[in-house]
Image (cartoon, rainbow, N blue to C red):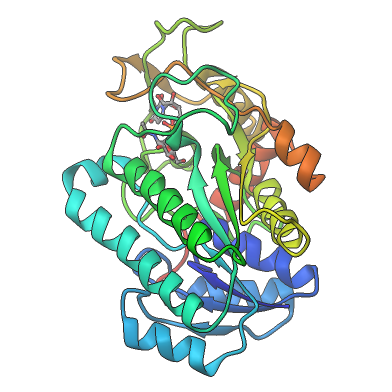
Length: 339
Ligand code: UD1
């Protein structure tokens, strides 16, 4: 099968490309490189031992997207491309709606015209909104607390509508919990372009000496140690979930399927700090500060549906995740080089 991976140079996309190739699929990448470095591609080629076919353009460019589908044989699409910073989305809502919605509309339009009907979409547990009970199951109503989250809710709805109009489509909406970790080689990983907002990238930069200390946003939540619980999932387990979802689309009768990709385990911020300290082999500086606006006490998956329907389960522990994140960060203290 020939799979188009949008955002294939990004954090989750790059790890998924490796597993697709390992599973014998033929891969094609499209990435704007607005938030990814070209070096990713040479590192992917070193890991996979294969030259990669890469188109460097923005999916919102309708002519280029149309041309790509006219030129290439494509059997399925995994759509990772999109803006993903929550705080930035609050500052620049129009940019987020325009980028994430337009790119998906252009992509889906080209797919429809060229009869490509298998699509795996990167959604997020953020679609469960602010007041969802844990563990979170796929049947909960969706909502959001910021423009980034709303783009995920809206795109899910758009794709459901496409599947009503064209029931031959097979669409997977994958709701990720908190992806962390890196490839075991330490040569690809998460490389935030700015000050990291997310916990593990920030902690990694503290450990490598780029930031002074971790600020823990609140220890007065109603949780065992007072810090919020999240469902951290190794990016390799997450990538494996995409391979499983893609193969399920070949046999399922449902035009749209929704699957949580999480471990089902809630891990506190202090637990993550201590796991990271074990990976690094020393204590890391931190301070407790006030809560961050918009944070919730607990978010973790009910992962049973993905297990039952995809035969997929996350297997890596928080110690595995921190060890792999640290290998990546210590080998690449400043992330990917520019060249
Ligand atoms: C965040 C987004 C979510 C997005 C996800 C992508 C918010 C409110 N939510 O999830 O929509 O899908 O990233 O991975 O931004 N923490 C600290 N200090 C830090 C950073 C984080 O204490 O410097 C804490 C947070 O309070 C939270 C936990 O660590 O309890 C995880 O935070 P983060 O990695 O940002 O993920 P989420 O907030 O769960």
